[in-house]
Image (cartoon, rainbow, N blue to C red; front, side):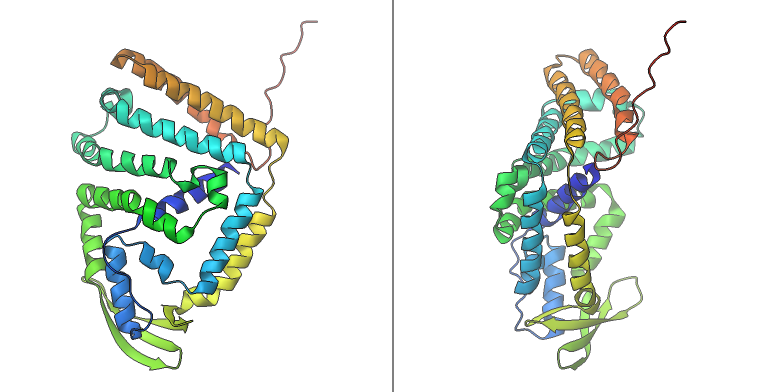
Length: 307
């Protein structure tokens, strides 16, 4: 259960944030022109183009999954989790000086610490945007318009992540630039099938098959595996069930984390902040007990009474 929450949040962050100002590719274009434009859009941070590139039936499948998830998820767990994320973002923003002066980063190499500091504000802003977006409450998820969500929340989220990647990692920056400049050439077409040559600087050109679905060109591998992937996702959601004892465990962990974050926010100096960090580090091993959706961890054995 805990891992599912993490994955869904990560997916939400990834898709929500990849927005920019470039107009999306149109389905009326030839396959090579269409996909070239899509690559450019995504490389520029326009993740809404990814959503719009999906046929209506595919979009409907995703919307059905979101709707089913909203029915199965516990509102108290979901809403509480995002409140905790929002509080964490507040700590990272308001106590930035203490974070960088703490034991957490004291032993980090100077260059690495400098890179983290350079990208800190962008990452914190992305976290705050996610924590206050439409998906921060289960009621919001139930009413979610995915296209609007991508356009409204995404600009800050993945835009910040892409910027951080470019600033801190020259290889990542070069990779993003290669993606933007990738060249797409039409090799052949036959009905609703096409073969495109993808050329990226420094890499061997490769041919990839594409299939047209409702006027939109998609990688053939995606089309071939779509229905199976959706069915597997539906099966996972059908099996999603939160037992009372599992919910109690999750809520207990969130209560402890919230308390730690409150004390970090209240810290007036580095010494007080460090004291709470030490307490948090002592608490972290509890997360290794296994996800709440699995078997509950065994309770410690009771001490034997004296004879």
